[in-house]
Amino acid sequence: MRCNGIAMREGRVGRSSQLAFEVRNVGRGSTRESLTMHSEFCQPTHFFTVDVEEYFQVKALRSVVSRDEWLSRPSRVAKSIDDLLGCLDRHGAHGTFFLLGWIAKYHPDVVRSIANAGHEIASHGFWHEQVTALKPAEFLDDVRSSKCEIEDVTGAPVLGYRAPSFSIIPGWEWAFDVLIEAGYRYDSSLFPIRRRGYGYPSAPRTPHVISRPCGKLAEFPLATTEILGYPVPAAGGGYLRQLPLAVIRRAFREASERGESATFYIHPWEIDPEQPRLAVSHLNRIRHYRGLDRALERIERLLEEFSFGSIASYLPAMEGQAPTRLAMGAA
Image (cartoon, rainbow, N blue to C red; front, top):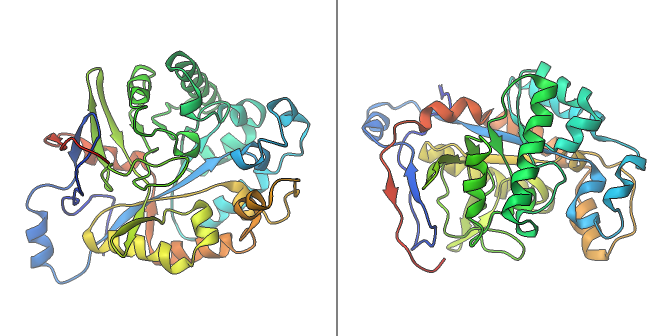
């Protein structure tokens, strides 16, 4: 028995938080009692998400590929998207595809193939610029232009956004105000971990609603687990390729047992072992190229074990929840 994307009980809020906004956790009410009353396990639907960008647009390769070279590089995104669409179709799953506005402009057929397969299309920005590298006005232009470019191709509204490199971090909460101003209804950029380059350690680990002076925005954080009491990233992407699959399965199994929906992500280039190898540092070669040949098989195994859907299908469950103000303090 599967429950279609409705969290079954309230998520646990961790230690003191420095989040400068209100959060409304999903899953309050009498559902815990219903879990006790029913012996049959009811598995939630998790979120399958794809950050759609070309292999040469990632941060690890920026030192050797400039933006001016993008159009001259061989495109490989279409084949990888076809492989992912086929994989989802085989398992009767749906997902959310966060597209660059650049992809929508120069490869509109890729956008249409995703939409025609019945999946949600959201925004990954236009130029794949990290939020931390932009001023508020520049960020507003980026998220507006990507939203418009995608909507011009699909004819459907773009509801969600994910920051490149999960780059909404403590101190950059103004990004939520910009997203609300630009007409977005949700964000999926917060990674509740502590690591170099990104992470929002004090963020709730379950879907929640961010309340800002200018409005509200649903937030869908990336999946984590705990090992020896420390949060470990387990949402997919490079972690799917670099870590044992058991770590990723553990995060989604734990969320399922709690009756909560967790968020998985992958990039099209991560299932493409035949992509061109570029001359980057040894560390970036490991980060970008290691595990490409096993990523798709691991995705298949996750789709066999867990139920996945789109983020947009869950938004109605976020409505009408009582707000909870998190405690202030160090992350």
